[in-house]
Image (cartoon, rainbow, N blue to C red; front, side, top):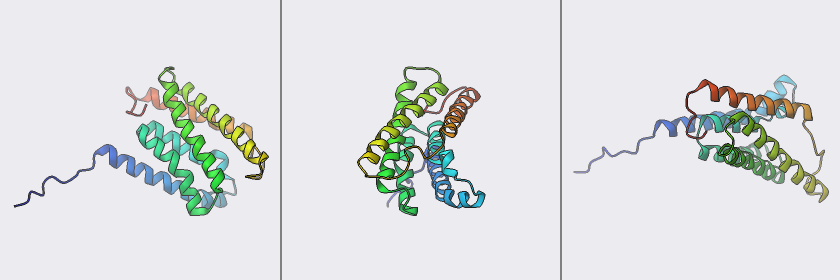
Length: 176
């Protein structure tokens, strides 16, 4: 007789990450429709970065990297936007953002400051590489398409969110 009681069970953490990831993908999928609905370029608010920060705060380090890699790829596959080169650039920026956050947070105790620094450094990387790609005519368009003041506000808001989440809990999740 075969014992079928040894069924692979999904842990709470895995289910939570799966549901979280599906919600993030759905939101990114809906960004173009939301932009048209409100007649506002939602990409100004950096929805991929918002989703990445939510992943960093509420899921695991591994899942944060997964989100950084898959969101630009998913966007490219469902809407053919942005181009493959720009999607690769965004992927690199998001991966760098995650890596910097976890590296810097080992040395600095302030999660808010760590998040702000990791966002700024990943943006510097993004704009330097984008400048090279524009100069080599691999992509076209303006170097800065989202107004700088919006980027500053979003960086401060995301850093503040990380701060609020850090003080609202006695312990960080395993990712923080």
